[in-house]
Amino acid sequence: MSASPLTASVIGGSGFAGGELLRLLAGHPEFEITQATSRSYTNKTVGSVHPNLRSLDLRFSDPADLESVDVLFAATPHGVSMERIDAFLEAADTVVDLSADFRLPEADLYDEWYEGHDAPEYLERAEYALPEINRENLEGAELIAGGGCNATATILGLKPLVDEGILGPETGEVVVDVKVGSSEGGAGGGAASSHPERSGVVRPYAPISHRHEAEIGAYLGLDVSFTVHAVDMVRGASATCHVFPDGPVSKGDLWGAYRGAYEEEPFMRLVSGGGGVYRYPEPKAVAGTNAGEVGFELDPSNERVVVFSAIDNMMKGSAGQAVHAANVALGFEETAGLEFQGLHPVGSP
Image (cartoon, rainbow, N blue to C red):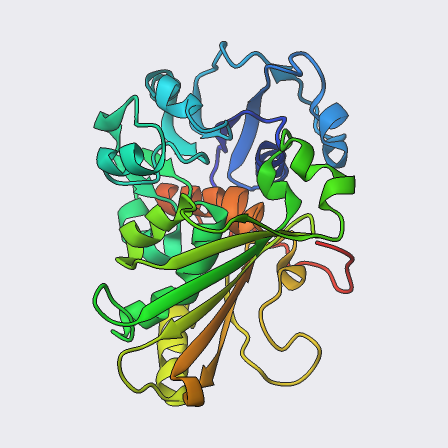
């Protein structure tokens, strides 16, 4: 622990991701939260919005009144950070943005997948927040862009195959099916996220052309066929990737690829078959944690590899990834503030 903690603010602290950031930072040995902002709840206590944080002696302030801090975490809707990035960087030495505003490396991609970009000159300065694929570039970064939760789950599942050359831009076909919880829609998710409409469903809400495909292409160099379903859980993203390599692949190749990629990673778990109830990655097993689980099965008769990956979308797919990236950028212990191991048994994640 440092002699003096760094000051931190959370912009957009009343949302789901903002609440998770506040929870993590409140227990982080290297940070002191000095500001949390919310337009809707200005002057209200943090605990009145996030009941798990009632012990936190902090009130929401207006986001227009930024305090000077060491690190600013922005948990705002898409489009806000790109409009306010100058103010964010003036207020803080390090900015960690959880939105989609800086997570793609080129302005052309925003023209294709979003509605353009208001501050494209900052895209070259931003570093993708997922340490498992960008650790070296995160060290000392001043602008960090959090990855999308569906993209994170998919990238973690497929990265070892890309590293080993089993998959590549001209090698193999990939079909990805992702199941996600209702918290992905945010605190203002609308009618489709209300409990009566969400309960009991397995609903395809992005059958094609999901924006997170752009991240997978940008950081893995893969074109994937990508579909996302909304399912009846609160927290979690589970990706099943059907991979059709061009050449033969053995189980030994797969074990070597996944162990080589993740054996030294502090938050990655390899869960592939074996005994017990939880034989493959499940969101329920990582709920509340920054862990990512990956696993696979080989289907020789169809020349297919089935890859499974599971994360908590609010943690590894959002706030936990942001804190992990900040730890790397600032030279802290990577696991600082992220040691929670999860619970078992638990209900719906």
